[in-house]
Amino acid sequence: MENRSLSNQVVMITGAGSGIGRSLAIAFAEAGAIIVGIGRNSDKLDRVGEEVEAMKGSFVSMTADVTIENEVIALFQNVMKLHDRVDILINNAGVALGGPLEDFDFEVWKQVLDINLTAAFLCGREAFRVMKKRRSGRIINIGSVSALTPRPNAVAYNASKFGLDGLTRSIALEGRDFGVTASIIHPGNTDTPLWNGKESISQKEGLMSAETVAKVALTIATLPDGVNLYESVVFPNSMPLLGRG
Image 1 (cartoon, rainbow, N blue to C red):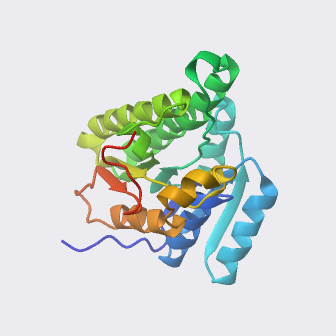
Image 2 (image 1 turned 120 degrees about the vertical axis):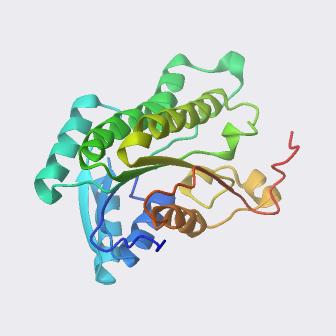
Image 3 (image 1 turned 120 degrees about the horizontal axis):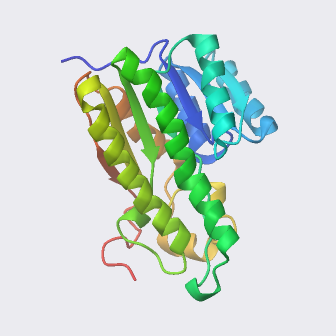
């Protein structure tokens, strides 16, 4: 079985304006994919688009709040008008807001769950509708090692990533008979803006590059048709993931 070519494949990436999303866009564009970069900040998306276009890649930016159902539906309608297909969706948009459980604000809880989980459901649902008809497609969700070994003072983030794992399993199950796969990548400490202000932890535990996560996603996306790597865990070797407190 030969690896799948990504040449001219339409790849939608949420949270594409920075961090892991930016690295995903560059890596998949280098592999020949047509990138649809999604985010709320048009300036950030445009800068990533300029990087991709400088390497002769294809990038279209689309601004949307992927926590709002109507905006997600309109987003996929626009992609279908433009490309008439969605081959790969990468749900990458995320936020990490923490604090002690007893002091955790309900509005912050809802914000984290909306961005980390509801957005993945909305985008995954719309992508699944397209992919099921075509009997082909991959949905890749960017989770977190916190879905395996939670940190303290991160109740909403932990819950959202555990939920994302359940969502991924559900999509994979319902897509099995229609050629649609779902996978989840659980990154450890990754050098992205999410770590701003948390230098004391990152210096102690170490960080890996966002490009590393993009390489894992690329490996999943180029697997032969009919094959899925459901779950991947990748983290810096210096990070005390196993048995951490």
